[in-house]
Image (cartoon, rainbow, N blue to C red; front, side, top):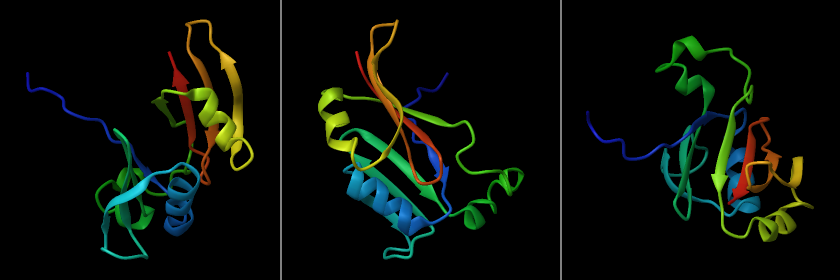
Amino acid sequence: MPALKNLIPNIWVADMSRSVAFYTERLGFSVAMAVPDKPPYVWARLLRDDVAIDLNNPETAAKDYPGLSGKPLGATAVLFIEVEGVRTLHDELKSDVAIVMPLIKQFYGATEFAIADPDGYVITFAEH
């Protein structure tokens, strides 16, 4: 069986400019690639450290995934990102973003918290 190399979530967003600003300004990502090369984008790959997230314009993405057209954004998707320094990250973000799960120690040993992005996608940051 071929080896799997990477997993990059591709999320559809209502407003590319707003979402790019949220991920770059609030969460410290940078735009690694985008289509077109300059805003306004229809697709952008964002990077921070070893984590990548793709943002996609729904109208453009629906051409490749017509079955997803018209589905609500956010829905039940949760992005789970392992970090070093979860408490520090929580303290940096808590006044700037919507915290949807407070900083807690989970029964399985991780300390984590979760935020919501502008389209309702939940992002959990966890440290083991």
